[in-house]
Each structure stands twice: as C-alpha cells, then as structure tokens.
Length: 137
Image 1 (cartoon, helix red, strand yellow):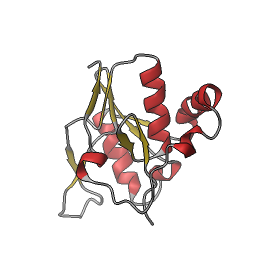
Image 2 (cartoon, one colour):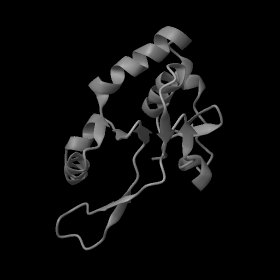
Image 3 (cartoon, rainbow, N blue to C red):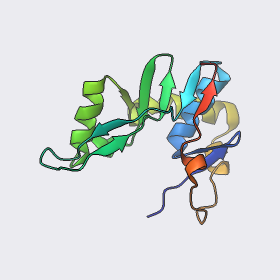
Image 4 (tube, rainbow, N blue to C red):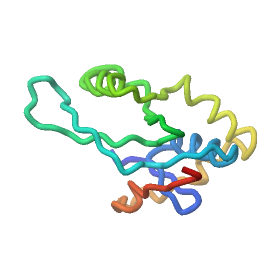
C-alpha cells in the first residue's frame, strides 16, 4: 500500500495529519522545523540485532513531536512508542490532532486537506520526504 502524500507551500507531508499540524503552526506563527535533521537509533524488538533510525516529524521550540495514527500503541509498534516516550518525544494521535484538523476545516473548508493530496502514482523523492523546513527556528 502506497503512502498518501500531501503537498503545500512546496513541502511534501507524509499525512494529512502532519499537514494540518503544519498549517496551524504556520498560521499562528509558531516557530518550528519539519523533519529536523536528527536521527535516533532504535530496535523494533529487544532481541533484534538490527537498529532502525527514527526521525521526528517536527521540532516545535525545543520539543520533538511525532504524529501517528492510533495503531502505534499496538503490536510491534509498542516498542517504538516506548522508545519515543523514553526520549521525551510528544506523540500526537487521533484525539491530540483533532483540534488541528478542526482548525483547518473551519478556516479553509472541510475538503481542503484532500485538495492538497499528491498524485499517488508519484514516488516520494528523498528531498520530498525529508525537506528539513525551518520556520522561525
């Protein structure tokens, strides 16, 4: 299954939730960085010898923010959720992101995020996926 990407202001987002958070931060002039250039190694399972690299979605002020669906707390993603918690990274899931989705719907219209969808036949490029956008930081 291909990831549904969204694009606005020349930036490609991994999800509509990330886009909604971006719009809110941008509109309120809150300093942030999208896909900051920092990586944290982690293991999916304790007995796994392979390390994976985690890169946060946003840095807002001096805090890292990860935006994920509610599935993160279940199954193999539970280790990743524990890892993020240990790092002190704020994880926004459905209830956390709802105010930002509501903000976009009220200020831009209910279908605005759908209008920002990229053609799903396009494969994301490295520069699209991690553009490292600074906004006031």
